[in-house]
Every structure is written in C-alpha cells, then in structure tokens.
Image (cartoon, rainbow, N blue to C red; front, side):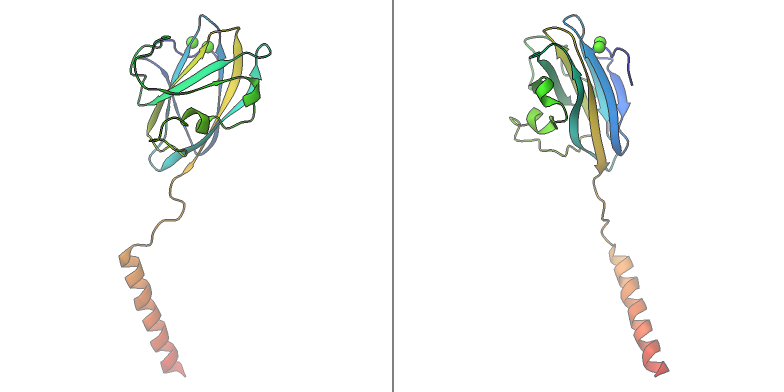
Length: 169
Ligand SMILES: [Ca+2]
Ligand SMILES: [Ca+2]
C-alpha cells in the first residue's frame, strides 16, 4: 500500500489485517498527517508493529499514536484532549517492535492487542519522513479446547475398543 493516507480524523483509511505480516508505507511532512484504522478479525491479535525502511534526515523524529476504536476521539492537534498511546521514534527504531513502547505508560494494554479496531495517527513536525510499518497478526487460540461431548464420545470409543480386544483374545 502506498500513496497518501487520510488527513480527516472522521474518515480514516481502513485496512483489515490478515494473519501474518501486512505492510503500510507512511510518508509525512509538516503539512501532512496520516490517519488510518486497522481492523482485526475475530480470533486475531496484533502481536507486533515493526518499523522498516525509515527515511529522513539524521536525528529526525516522527510521531505515531493510536486509540482503540474506529477513529480518533478528536481531531489531531498539538493539544490533543484525550489519552492516547504513542511513540516518538526515528531511524533508531528500524527493525524494532514499537508496540511495547507505545503502550508502556498504559497499564490496561499489553501486547498482543486483541481490540477489533485501532485508530492510528502518524505525524511529522520536522523534516519529511517516509517509513514502512509492518503489522504482525496471528490467531488468538491456536489450540482449541476439546468439548465435553467430544471427550464423552472418545471415552465411549475407548471402552468399545477395550471390550472388543477382550473378546478377541
Ligand atoms: Ca502522507
Ligand atoms: Ca495524509
């Protein structure tokens, strides 16, 4: 995915995350913000968010924030009124998972994140930057619990087998 993403907080670009890695390039400058929402299907979780291919001037910093929900709770501004989880990062973050950094001051959130929708805000106050975000998602329950009915059926089958073996001796 490339091209510019929405500047309007109430009409963010929306992406559904499949299992595995999804890549999204953000290009930002002082006159451009990028607002997008990622959707996690039922049974999927967001495991990590990795910065790839960060391009800007040396020492530049970028802002990436998110809130749980389909869109931000207010229009982006330098005095944003509501709690938001975010990270300030630069080229040091290349190949790093920034998800733990984003939620480190929020005791209610620990990766992996299982919220159905996350509204993101990319912002640049310095020189322009361009980078790729790798979203890694996976299934929340890889080992399904066997149901009571299935267990009952299994024990009945074992009894039948045992009887059959006794008879055939
Ligand atoms: Ca942009
Ligand atoms: Ca934009």
